[in-house]
Amino acid sequence: MYSTFLKTKLHRATITAADPEYEGSVTVDRDLCKAAGLREFEQVDVLDINNGARFTTYVIYGGPGEIQVNGAAARLVNPGDLAIIIAYCRLPEDMIAGHKPRVVLLGPGNKITGSHEHAMIQP
Image 1 (cartoon, rainbow, N blue to C red):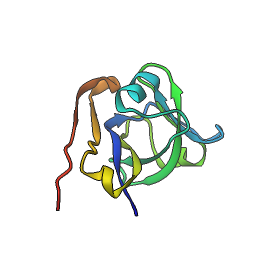
Image 2: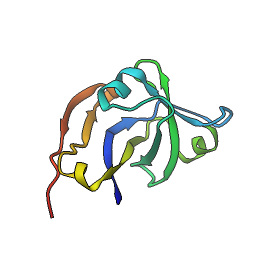
Image 3: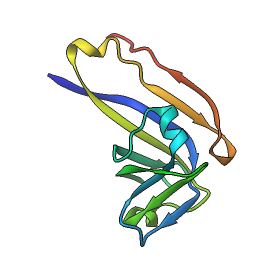
């Protein structure tokens, strides 16, 4: 049996742009992706802290500080909104205990202010 867990998240990312004419996806600073362990074309959920909107899309790499929502989802956010970008993973039972989700904390300009991994708490 597999269960789904948090893999990584970018916490309090600032949306820098929204382009409804682009095909889709969320463009994320390549260095932020590297810090969080996000891969290009990986599925993510984006949670807008300002308005509560939530949607699923995929990552494409962008330039420094860039967090741009593209396609139809661009209508759910506004530049300047704070967001959480989350990726999940599916783990078999024998890998759950050793799993450590990664959290990357962001500040103004989408600069990394900290990061940490969480140890799994056993039930």
